[in-house]
Length: 149
Image (cartoon, rainbow, N blue to C red):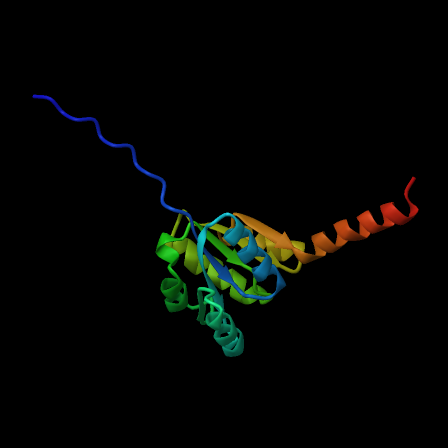
C-alpha cells in the first residue's frame, strides 16, 4: 500500500484588527495597506465609522472590549490585533478576551505607563507601546540634537 505525503500546513493569510482610528490606528492602517494585509478597523465613534466607510475603509462600529465586537471584526482568524485606543481599561479587557478567543493572535497594546504595559503583557499582549517611554526617548533625542556634542 502506498501513501501520499501529507501536504504541509499553510500559514493563514495575514489578517489584522485595528482598534481605534486616531493617529496610532491610522499609522497602523497605512502600514497594513502598504503591505497589502487585509484588515478591519473597529471604532466607537459613529461619525468616524460613517466617514471612513464612505471611502471604502473596512471599518465597523463597536467597543473593542466586547466579545461580540471582536467576533464581528474577525478575531478568530486574526493574526494581528493592534489595540490603538487610548483607554487602558478597554485595552486590558480586549487583550484578555482576544487571547481567550484566539490564542495565537499577535497583540500590540497601547498603554500610558510602564506599569500598564507590564500588566498588558501579563494579560497576554505580545508587545506594549508605552506613551511615557516614547516621550522619554523623544526628550532624550531632542536634548541630544540641541545640546549634545
